[in-house]
Image (tube, rainbow, N blue to C red):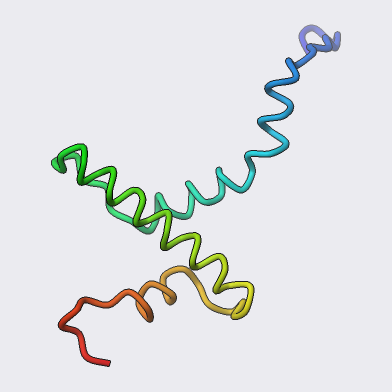
Length: 88
């Protein structure tokens, strides 16, 4: 409202569709942003590979979470993503 008057602005249908369907993507981007480290010094192909790996890990976490709802993303990564030389 400006000066006490309401002005109705119509949104384009593309914006309405984006807001309706992109909530899950925004949530996954938010979760991945706080969990994984993105370095500026990586070459483009390393960044691309890390991006796909992080998406793969996040998608597997979502599927795992359907069965074990009490697990957080950090706990999932610590439990299932170990270095090759780590012992169980």
